[in-house]
Length: 345
Image 1 (tube, rainbow, N blue to C red):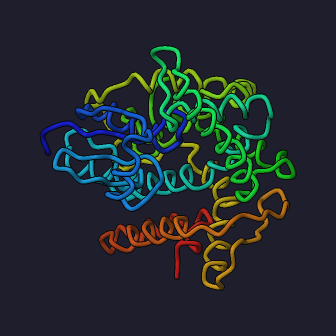
Image 2: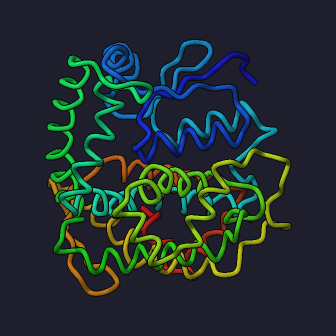
Image 3: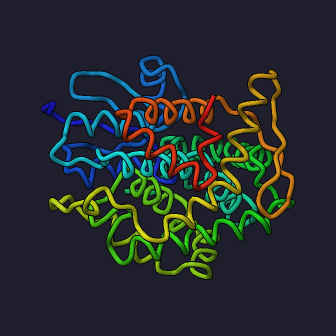
């Protein structure tokens, strides 16, 4: 365990900032959460090599990014508060869910945040308060207001563009909302009032869902109204899970997977797996976007994204690194659910 305090730099309305913050909170790790405001952004970007958020500054002065990598590092440093199962089925299932929540449901977050004009303007200002040097403790000075307003004016069209290139515009509304609503209902049934996907203990995948809910789906009025209509129980779970701290809860015994996980894997196969395959092909061909058909028969166009391929390769490597007997069983399980092919070369 590394002594000292970690600092999470990001923004409260950020999907991945809240995921990382959820991990620090649940794992009982000494940390501070601060906005990546103009006074620190240049230093952090020079050190981390990215403009993305969050970044975490470690006690020894490292500045690192990528929410999954950050949580993997914390899990290695604080094994008493692990959030990554170590048994083969739960470990790979946790990685699959984490990949899916991180790389696919950002579509739903972008759609529900930017599709409504009035709520989009409110969300742009919320983001700008953190990124533009605002403060929630007192009225803004004229200079702060100018900075926040300028940042919001940039964020609004950026959000709308991101929604479009991520296949989350109004033309995809029906299929996107149907899938996301079903995902939330199934998750709510699996986690119950205050559990996780793989037992009473919260996993990295649960923290991804919690971060997404806390930043977007339970925070933005338009998105929250959607969730309230589809799966209100997940809002109650979000409130409870955000306040939880590791009390030594366990995973399901004997590397068991929860009943009902198959339904989630079916949803994953019908959307995210189609995107991963198309994205990989587009990257290999040097194309800027990919076309693929999801389970409801709708053709979707999305921007080509290397991080999605990096995620696929990381999970592929995790499967390959399992002991031979475990690897064979996990591959058979993935094959039974129609998911193995997307992780094969």
